[in-house]
Length: 248
Image (cartoon, rainbow, N blue to C red; front, side, top):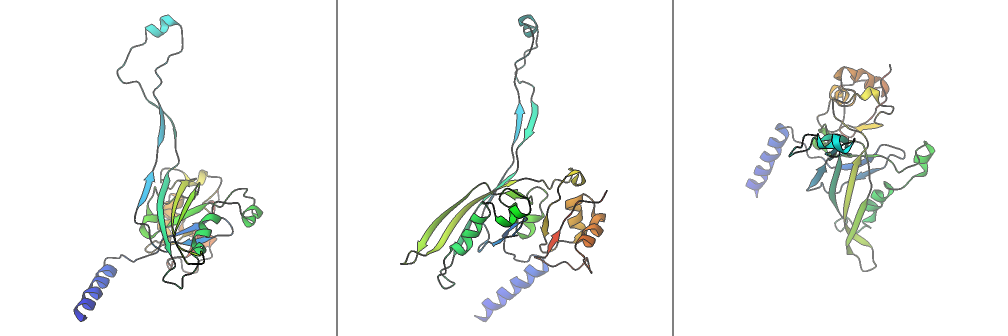
């Protein structure tokens, strides 16, 4: 028993020394009423997809004589048309059997709320469901996968019930479609809208956040001023920062 405890303690120390801190994933709306959906269990799989449209139409405009003079090719020339929004898909698991058999819809109803227009969101002039971010430790530090998104669909399957019909276990299939990109070669200052909020995760610094959002770590002062930070170096995991456009 003691040896097992010692092994677990050693593993915990090694994890902390390596800088790995367990964190819970969450889904945060970036519009009022700023709903936060805690993921009871972190996803075991996440599917990322990004597609583009290319045209390889070999038809040529002009007369029949002009068409006959066009050089034939085994592989037609491809021309870029447009890009599709990045997407994240995942399955989330919820279970309240170990916490007093509460109604599992205390979690799943929050997911549904992210797909409908909310009176508070409309009060701020947005005639749409709220935009969201999927936040999970270092996964959210990715330049390509930490985007602001909308949720086009949520599929919920209830898999366990109490005798009175109360659902206590559920699986939710959820998809996120990007409305903004984190790619560094895009000019954030050219956007008419800034990302509304940023939820700080373990290990993130204010200059790193400035680099991801504004393309230059020196803009940390803008973030500090916007959020009235007395000590910009003292960021806490879970802290919410408001991001506004840079002043020209």
